[in-house]
Structures are given as structure tokens and as C-alpha cells.
Image (cartoon, rainbow, N blue to C red; front, side, top):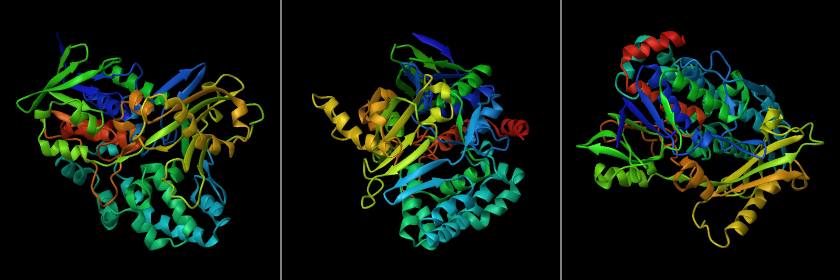
Length: 505
């Protein structure tokens, strides 16, 4: 059975897919988003258990309420007429190393002051490191992501509207594809600060300094100082809900529990999709928010794509998956609790060793309505390879065994954590892969700086485009929102873009 025809079909309602869909609806396209899950949001969705509202993924945000925000997500929300309430906080977190705990403040001087308590020489070197990167941020911030597209028409657009910012960018061009590691090598010798920089890169990209591109860290350093960090009231689901409202406001549709079985291709061109229900939706453009691996191997027939393209996609390296611990806990006596923590267990092990670095988020510190009165929610997670996980007789025992490193990390923050637990959910790479439809439960591509680039939004098939964290510019909420912008803008004329930019400015 063939259903209505659309201008654009978007597969998946992750932030990248919703940003592309919302913008295209704003441009006047007939857009439908097909989401396999019964909840929108992909890796950013919320879920509820016994009165506790949990984030499934991201919990760290910048520039959600700033009127001059450089966050691509905020720019999309602005132009589709939506917003989210958010709570600003500082310090943005605490890093717990074996040698001691470091408070991480938004203000650079205050942050380096904390570092100086551990290593005065290292703090001075950190200042040099930041001074090398921040001019790149200053150059980038003059060009809003909303002005970007992924084809040749980008260049006359930028030359016509943003020439001063482009000229400012010229001296910083060597940094655009440089690794953070190369900047660190030129400015920092202190081993403790080098490990600190590696940790911050790992938290951003899943890779250490030598694998992370310099613009990503330049943007992070600049934004957290200028705009600070915030948590959305209602959790990450509030952002997803705002994107869905904006999509529907401009005439777009979202179908939940609507699994796309196959992208339909005829004579090298996209013609629509077939759903699991066997219904067919027709459109000349399909945007996949699924990963590059799933798009090229699960959603397309083998003869739709050149063999070389399929092999290249499968060869894209991945960052490992995760163990997750979602807890509902009693909050009595925890009045001074802060919301973000990173625990490194062993200084002699690499920070990327599974289980050694544990991330902890306690967002009910900022938004008490996420938990029943007198309680908190806790989300802790750490890297864990997908291989060797099977739903066999030993699965439950292995889950609990692997969760121990997360409990050990939590004890550094809340010593009696086990006695406080009223709800416990342990997630494995299989959970990650199943509920989030992530290829092998991965965090995204592990493409190291200088070893390749994230694939762009185009594909070899006419009418098929991609967005999300396996697409340029990469991993993280701002990056996936930017991928949605790049894709949507590429599908409309420059004149339409200019009209929207007038509205935005």
C-alpha cells in the first residue's frame, strides 16, 4: 500500500534528524519523520521509571538560552520558533583523579587557578595552550552555523555576507584540521595537565588529544567561558519536545513506532521508503539519521550502492560502546551535591581503558522535578566494548560485575550510594544497540584527527542524504545539530537561506 507523497522523508528522530526536518519544514517542504522507537529523540530521549525521569544520553549543554548563542541547536530552535528553559550552573563539574579532585569552572582564570593548586607550572602551560586555540574560536564565532551548507554555493554566500570573519579565519587555517595533540605538544610539557587535556578531549569526542580536531576544543573552551553551561528544565527530552513542536508548527509530521525497513532506490535515485508494515512512503529525498553502518548495510539493498562505498563505510572505525547505570536514590543528607563528575580510577591506566574513566550526571540537583520528592536521579556510564556480549545464561551476572566500576566511582561522590538505591537499571552495549538502534552500541566513529574526515551529508545515491554523529562535523549535540543544518540548507536555494538568515539576525 502506497501512502501520501512527501518532499522529504527523514529516517530517525535523533537531534540531527529533527534539526534537518524542522529546518526543511520551515523552508516550506512537506516533511515526515519516521521513528522506529515509541519515543522521539534517539540517543537524547528521556524515559520514565517509577516516577524518575532519566536521560538516556547527553546531559551537558552550552548556550541553550543565550540570545547570541553559537550552539547550532539553539539556532535551529530560534528559527522554528521554539525555546527551552534552562538552569545555569558553575562549577560545570568535578574531575576526581587519584591525586585529588579538580573543580572545573566556566571562567578560564578560575579554572586555571584550581589547576595551579595541583601544578603551578602546568597551569601556566594550560594558559599557553588556551591562548593558541582561542583565536580560532574568535574567528569561527563570526559565522553562524545556520549560514553553512555542504556544496559549492557556500563560498559565494560566505564571501558576500561574512568576508571580515573569513579574513579573520585565514591566520588560523593551519589549526582547522590540526589535532589538539599537536597544539598540546607545542605548549604543554607537564604530564598532569597533558592528562587533563586528554581527558577533556575524551569527554568531547571519545578520543584523546592527538585524535581530536582543534576546532572542537577551541569551540568548547570559548563557549563555556562566554556562555557558560546549562541544564534544560525537563531534561534532554525537553529539547527533543521543542524540536518536535517546531517541526509540527511548520507543517511537518512525526510518526512514532514507524520502523523503516528499506530505502527504495530506482535507477540510482531515491524514490521513498518501505515500512515494516509494508506501507510505502514516496519522496524524491530521503535523509537517514541512522548511522553510516546501518544506512549502508541495513537500509539499502546490496546492489544499490557501489561495493567500494559499502566497504569504506564498514571500515569506518568506531568508538566503543558503554555500560550505563541509571539509579533513583534517596536524597536525604545530600544538600551540597553537585551535578557533574568524572572519576578516573587508576593513574597508571589509559583514560580510554574501559571502566577506568567513569562519567556521572545527577541532573535532579538542578531540576528537582526529575525525581520524586526527597530523591535524586543518577546516570553513570563508562566505555565498554560490544564484542563478547551475548544474552546468554551469564548475561545478568556479567552486567552486575561490569557495573561495579560505576558503583566504585559513585562511592567517591556519595559514599553510601548502595544503601540509597530505590531504582536500579543496568545497561550494556546490547542495551545501547537495541534501544538506541546504534551499530554495535557505538558512541560514533572513532576517526582520529589527521587519519581521515567524517563523511559528509551526501551519498553516491541521488536524493539520499545523511545526518547524525557519523556525519560531518561529528560527535556531540552541537555537531549533530550542525549536520542537520548543513543537510537542510544544501537542499534549498541560497535565496531561501538568505531570507532565513535575515530573520535570525
